[in-house]
Image 1 (cartoon, rainbow, N blue to C red):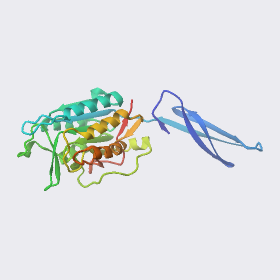
Image 2 (image 1 turned 180 degrees about the vertical axis):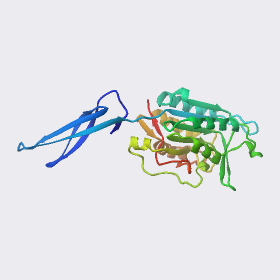
Image 3 (image 1 turned 45 degrees about the horizontal axis):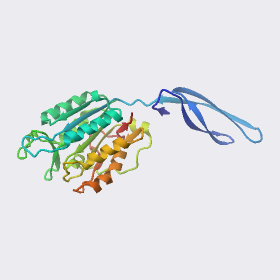
Image 4 (image 1 turned 90 degrees about the vertical axis):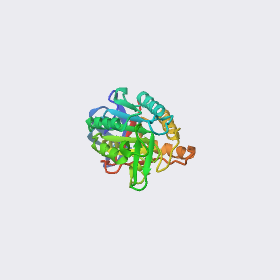
Amino acid sequence: MYIDNPSANFHEEVYIRLSSGQFYSPVDLVIGRNEILAEATDINYRKASKSFIIECKMIEFGTYHALFIAVDKYRSMNNLKYPVENANDIINTLTSKYTFDPKNVHLLKNPTRQEILSELQELRKLSSADNLLIFFAGHGYWDKDIKQGYWLPKNAKLNDRTNWLSNSTVCDYITGIKTRHTLLISDACFSGGIFKVRDPLVKGLPTSVRKTYETPSRRAITSGALKKVPDRSVFVEFMLERLKQNTERYLYAQKLYIEIKNPVIDGSPFEQTPLYCVIHGTGDQDGDFIFIKR
């Protein structure tokens, strides 16, 4: 049995099967070894007993890191208005309401391609006990001929792809980052191209915090599939609203996606449809990123 609060006893319903039937009772458990003696007496004063051990361990959640990449000022393209503002809003929410320490959250404002790659390289220093959120907001592009999506940094030019950042390059870096969970959130036109051949995940929500957390994941939530998205992001607005209003101790990334999907579709002028998927070929093992509320 695993718990996340080491400071106090906690109640647990224990089911006991004796030779004469099945019984249950609430008991107080503590971290470590719990010796339980169950005794039952029937209406005829016949007694049965059973002793057993319940071992309680702590869920050891790793450190939460985040890299925010926000581009709204371009040298050779139309500027955007909201990416940096949106990134700051999400950062403030995560550091005030969730277990993201400000010292582990880095915002890249209007970076070049090289600056983005440099930061992604630094993230390879993280360990398998850590958790990582990567957020991108800015211009995006989808090349339908080679079926490749791109992030467009500050120094990108439409007629020169030298400084474009391909989805495949991003995926290569995510593969090399050995965190337990990596969640990519992309708010850009054609951001669904990060998934390539994989379909959106719509299966049932995970039910075990321990098992879900222990199993590595490499997943993404994107603001749309292969369509344009508006500069003023309804995707970020609804995501922020859900993160701020959340009262659950553990919020799965998949549940966050499910709860914002329809509001984004209904509120978008471009009929954008957010996606939540495995990032193919990066080491996902069917776990999920978990936002932990303070």
